[in-house]
Length: 170
Image (cartoon, rainbow, N blue to C red; front, side, top):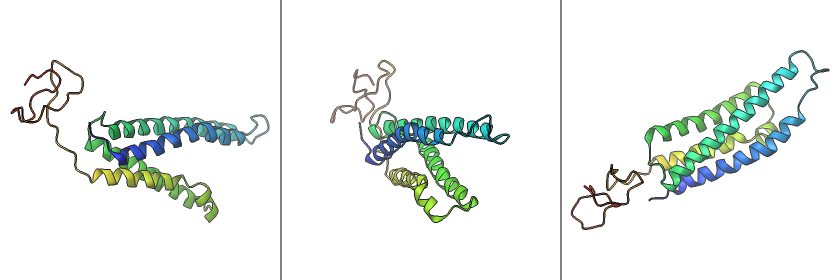
């Protein structure tokens, strides 16, 4: 099994961001809760919709971290479509975060205080760096007899990588 440090670093960063988001973000967002009785019409509903959106983002962060860690440890094989999806997600998050700050005419200190875009840019860079590295070829196919991940065939066995390393079948 081949480890990939780029994916592991991105997955660890995102796992940390997930926990910060769940605990600190939840506390931060709860402090902005308007009183439903005294707030202007629609303010509480807008806050509640944002609150639900924050929880949906938690799922995104968790799943992206899990997939990056699974790719990094080699449990999941390299997959162009998954890597492209992750690149588009992180790149999209970065661009939309910056565009949102720009549209709201946020001052420079808000770009630094709300620097989530920098994390997304780093994640984009880590996955992009990994995408440029070639995937080592598989030395064997999955065996129908043993559905677990097969081990490579022993060197010099003459099977040219077609023999299952678990059960020995061709």
